[in-house]
Length: 81
Image (cartoon, rainbow, N blue to C red):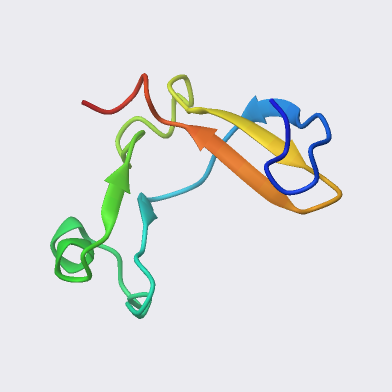
């Protein structure tokens, strides 16, 4: 995968985290407490894996990192409907 900013080859890996994984749209303030209901009110997009399957860390999306530009790209195409 080539970096969309500089065009150099990106390192391949996986996106990992703790708790809920989500995308928060611009203009929304990050909540202090995380729950599905609060995130829905913030128009957040919940991303797999959810908080239940994190302990197993098997279904994380493929990700690519550009160290020069500090850009991370994650491929959720196989994890979301």
